[in-house]
Length: 280
Image (cartoon, rainbow, N blue to C red; front, side, top):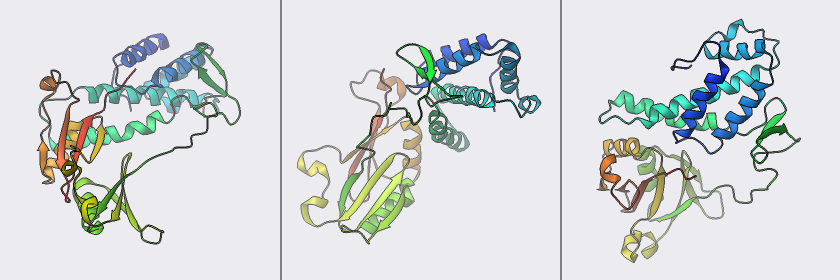
């Protein structure tokens, strides 16, 4: 559901709004590619079909014949518009927030991935070619990496612990991770997952279980976070020890490091949560 006011019958103005929103920053790398694909496809449609897209935008999708074979195009347009509205909302961080507002922003952040999954994927048999600036016919079996096989898909930090169950309970109860117990493998361990973060807990003894700072390394792990303010509030609210507090946004602008904070886990490890910065 859209919240902004959009023109009633001018799709060109809608795409002007989309382009400006993307230029404001904070969007996925392929948001512009998605915009260009949709814009070129709409440009090739008769006026009546374009008007159906405007009806989608204004909540009148039920009036469009279900037999229309370009409904997926209207759905993709709505996906992009809803995504951009969320990006604009999240970009404005108020000085104070209620718990309901924090929860709303957190849910909104978690929903962005679902929108971004469609960016750059084929639509109505076409996908956008950034090299030629024109949409092209999608080849059968072609993926977003143009056939490049990804040999490395994901990674996980490994924490050696004296008591992996105590550590797992801390990360589940205090940090919202989900624990998967894999005692049937060659190296018994517990895998912790939350969002895009994975941590493997293994049993250990001696120096290997000590925090990295005892060996001259400041942090045991970095977590890059789009909205550290939300995560800081969650962690502090759960009674977790904060080692370095999160600076105010204006104060952080004069710093030479990313806006960040540091917390301590149940085993004394120092975890740095650093502001994720989009790069061009």
